[in-house]
Each structure stands twice: as structure tokens, then as C-alpha cells.
Amino acid sequence: MIPTRALRDCLDGAIPGVVSTCAPDGTPNIAYMSQGQYVDGEHLALSYQFFNRTRQNILANPHATLGLIHPQTAQQYRVHLTYQRTETAGPIFESMKAKLAGIASHTGMSGVFHLQGSDLYRIDRVEVVPGSTLPLPVPAVDHLPALRACMERLPATPDAESLLDALLDGLERHFGIEQALVLMLDPVRDRLYTVASRGYATSGVGSEIQVGDGVIGVAARERVPIRISHMTSEYAYGLAMREGAAPRGSDLPQDSEIPFPGLAAPGSQLAVPIPGAREPLGVLFVESPQEMRFSHADEDALVALVAQVAALFRLFLAELDLADEFQPAPEKVSQPSGAPLRVRHYAVNDSVFLGDDYLIKGVAGNILWTLLQDHQASGRTQFSNRELRADPRVRLPDQSDNLEARLVLLHRRLAERQACVQMEKTGRGRFRLNICRPLELEDMDPGAG
Image (tube, rainbow, N blue to C red; front, side, top):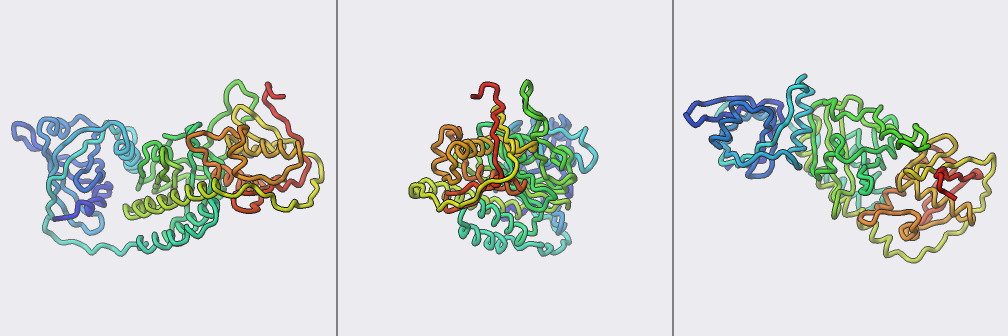
């Protein structure tokens, strides 16, 4: 019995498969397969783009034979299939749609290839076709030891920010993945925001992507990994990508956007959802200028890795909820000096500007504005995650507040901008604001005050 998982590498499109069908009158038909996808040990899916002879035959006679060639060993397989159904939405369809876009762009067929559905087949049996083969090349990465090395380090991290750093360090050191991003989900705004990155000219921390947009957004929406092996303009984010224009009818400046740091010309991409209870916590996204850089083994390893990241992330949150009542650390004696800095807050999307420079928006922006208001009113500089979670002014979403991720985002954004306001950790779930200039707070909401 041949493990059907051995067929996965044959379905990526490097060597097109051949689909054989038969009309009700016995007339045979042979056509090339545009794209196939391994579903599980008993099923695979083939792309449906055209109502051609293959499609007509399958609807009339559900039996088909698929000829496959392994792209590295040249081993040939003959797979006997029975058509089950066609899906036009959902994880399988969206994953195949993304991959087909890559294949179409790579072959100059973007205007021709359009996925109408994913045809699901039951695998009845698999035959090995006799013939000469090549030995399977030794992979550049031994995935099981690499996964173990990464997973051993993660539990030793003391907080969410260190966890993200350890994840990206492990990907680079043990998997050789040089470009990587971690994005967290804002379920209220239905957007993903970048909290950590590696291997780009700019960090992109704070940049956003709409759920459903590109490889990252589709992976989050469908809660399924998406791997693309060929360059595709449809799923290339690029350095010039922005999160969107300011809301119409508002006084919000137009430059309140952070460029997304993705490669301008990616050869391969892999987006893996970070699992959560009701919706994904976020997405791990890796890419490379090299085509066919990420294998099924990479996908499997990263799925296992982010599962541990998600578990540790939830553990950090639980520990913070059970932590002792807030005990402030000794105050630092430091008096802000210099010319006052104007800090503007726009309530339409909680964006904050330091002087003329855009800093942050959304929940993280509202957190910063709340902290600065408290500092201005009473001189406070020390705060705790626990009190922020209970503060109604912060307006954390009920279903998944992800406060830790938002504080990581805010801390990194302030540090990256070398702002006159910085966040310094003083203990588990505790931090201090270090403010080196006097601040003049101005709420730009016309109804404020």
C-alpha cells in the first residue's frame, strides 16, 4: 500500500499531471491537470477552470485516472479516483485559488486561469508505474530536528514579546527562513496588524492587512495554511502597499499609514494561521525570492510551531490575569525638558501623531492616548496590563482583547520611532512610561471636551 501523502509533492504543478476520463459512450479523453491539492489520506482536489471535455465526462461518469510524476525522483504514479463534489468556497477552494494565481502568473496565463471550483475526488487506489527513478535529494533542512530546536526555546521566554523574537530567531537559525512576519488579528476591525518582522529593510510594525486580502488575509479568514511556490503579482504585497486611505469626511491626515514590508517580487510564500479558540490569534507569514522555497515539510513544521506559540501566548495571558495586584516599582526621578511636543489624537480611528509624525492607530493608539491622559492629569508613569484590561476607556473587544500583542506593537513602534515617549518593562505585566519632553495633548475629535 502506497502512502497517499507521498503524492503531495507531485501535486504542486512543477510537472503537470495527466487526467484521463471517459465519456458515457466509451470515448476516452486525456488532459493536463492545472493544479491538484492533497486533502487527506483518502481525498485530493483538482482545479476546475473550464467546462471542457474532462468536466463533461466527470459529471456523466465520475471515474478518472490521474498520472503523476514526482518532480525530484521522476517516480511515476497512476492514481484511480472517483469524483465526489465541487466546492466553490471554503478553505480548499481559497487555498487552490491562491496557488493557481501563482501558477498562472508564473506561466503568463493570469488572464486565462480562473478557478471556478475545486473538484474533490476519493482516492480508490494508487499504482507505482515501473521505470527508472532518481534518489530523493537530501533536503537543505532536516525539519524534525529544526522543529525540536525551535520548540525547546519557546517555553523559556518570559513574555509575549520575547516569544515572538524567539520564534523569528528560530526560523532564521534552524529553518534558514530569512523573511518572516507575525501579524495579530483585530477581530472588531477585521484586520491583521504586524507586531514582529525579520529580514526586511523596514520593520513594518503597525502595518495592517484586511482579513481576506492576499495570502495572509485569506489564511486568516479560512483558517488554513496557504503555500505558493511561484511568483504572483496578485499576492505580492510589496514595499509600496499601504493600509488604506483616511476615512472620508474626517480631518485625519492622509499620511497615517505604515508601509507593509513584504518583498516586492516574492518567489514563494507561506501563510500559517496561529490558532485561537474562536478565531485565529494571527498569522505567521514567511516568504522568499526563491521559487519553490517552501515544501510540504516546511508547512507541516510551521503549523506545529505556531500551535505551540498560540498555547504559550494564551498561557501568558492567563498568568497575567492571576498575577498579584499591581505594586508600582520605585519612581524614577526624571524631569521632562525641552520644547513641548504636540500630541494629537483622532477619535475616528484612534490614531496618534507625535508632532507631525504618525505613530499608531486602533486599540494600541487608544491605549497610548489613555496612558498619556493619566500622566498629564496626575503625573503617573507606572501602569499594569491588568488595570488596562479593566479600564473602560481602552475599549478592548470582548471576544479577544489580545492586550499583550497590542502592547508589544506599541512598545516596538515607540522604540522604532525613537519617540520621546518610551515603554520600559518593570515586571510581569507591568511597565513604566519614560517621557523626556513636556507633552501638549490635543484631542482632534470635534465632539471632545
